Amino acid sequence: MSWNNRTRIKPGDQAILKLPSGLLKPIEIKPNTIISIGKFGSFHTNSLIGRPFWRTYDILDLKDGEKHARLRVVPASDLNSETLSVDNTPQDDAPVKEDAEAAASANEKFDIVGEDGSIIMRNNRLTVDDTSRQALTMTEIEELKNAGTGSGKEVIAKIMAAHSALGEKTEFSLAKYTLRKSKKFLKRFTVLPMEVGTVAEYIMDKDSSRIMELRPESLGLVASWSNAHHAGNLDQVEGNPTQGRYMVVDDTGGLLVATLAERMGILYPPASEKEPTEQPDPDTNQDDDAMPDQVESTTDAHSGPSRPNPKDTYQAATSNTITVIHPHTQPNLSLLRYFGYILEDTSSSSHPLYSHLHNITWLQLLDPSADTVYSNPPPAVDADTLASWKPSKRGQHFRKLRRHTRTQRVADTTRAGGFDSLVVASFMQPASVLRHLVPLVKGGGQIVVYSPSIEPLTELMDYYSRERRGAYMKMMQERVATGLDVETCMDDEEEDFPVNPTLLLNPMLQTSRVVEWQVLPGRTHPLMTSRGGPEGYVFSATRVLPAIGKVNAKGNFSKKRKAEETVSESPKKLRVEHVEQTKETAATVVGADA
Image (cartoon, rainbow, N blue to C red; front, side, top):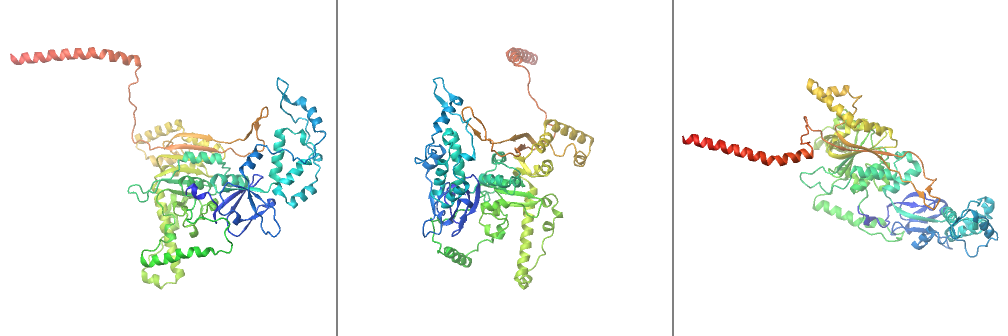
């Protein structure tokens, strides 16, 4: 789905509200409903429909006769002025404190002074922040908040005017003080589109263990090394029926799948052709718009071939697909609901993931004959018997048949291999996962493994190291020379070689962490409010196809001086050989004449 189709808010869209405090709140745009954002207030969803994303709104106060609060678009000039601290000075009607100049002069000896005696930067070393310096009590502040005037701006102005030591603050300290009050009292929010990075940031703040502490920067690193991209519409191209296939082991609730799907162009549902209108009439019947389509569908059913059953297109795509391998009956992909997709829900049949997202269990991959769904197809029934059954029994028979056919098709294509990349973010031991999945990746494919800690990935680096690869190849040559079965002997050497080290080249271990800094003269340091937790590490390697037989490297490794001498002497040798050959030819001719 192109970005141009997601510039405006439409009914049914998923969005995220960014509050002044920095918190994120996911919402669904349902017409004729009320959205509440806690202490900041509430508003009607119809006020957002038809408006663009990335706009900031103020929640206005209710007037007489109004049931719902109105929204005001905050212009860019106001946002920039607040960011640059241009309008962060107290109001003109604020009382000037008499002791402000005295406190400033007493603090001059701690200021940063230039050579000419001018003050470069003030210092607030003697400033004491105490609750007694605020003249307003908590009760009075609550009354100002309940009065609800000016979307919180008047409350901030009165709080700053009642501060007795406001003149002692430096310009930067005053800006930080104003910013804290704005985050606390402003009735303002920003509407953001539902994107993978925003969802990752929201889950990280709410429950980071749910996504294995996968930060947005680590998520971008994994997506880059996976080389996931749209493979084009290759289903109709002969000879390329299975291009753009990616295999995923996802224990992040679907965040990893959503990241790859976004790069492949199959994450967002198709945009409706009808453009939304701003603030639609709540009394409008939305079902009337769907009636022509229903009539057209009925007419087509009599005049031509009917539309395919959505259940038949479930996991039916052969290119540009994502195959999820999971240990349970159903994979945990709950985060995909933020992007309009619910697993095995026919209401999501128009979503690209409905046909391009495949799932298979570990049992169906490693031992399909032990899986009852794969190995036990429903018995064949003739048409007369089907006609005699009740509709419920007939529907149950077709559901079992579709499930068996789908499971068998996905399992067979997965076991055949040919995947472009393998991406793993799982709590399982990485070596046990790569042992079975790396052979399914085609040559030149990328292998990417994420882990919150570095210890599991250091083991992988050792398993695919050059020294272990050399020992493995030497052992294989000895086994072949002695005539032993290689596959049988490999089970005995599983402790030393849990994976085949010859299948991957160029293993790398990387990490990425974004740290915010405060940049000021003499006060540059990382922000102390950044969240901790694991760093997150990424293992990447390239799949290769080992050469069959012995490979010998050949070439001329002589020095340059020796090569030059050989070139200079070569004409003499050629001339001598030519003279000798001429003499032999002449002697042969004389003998023939005699």
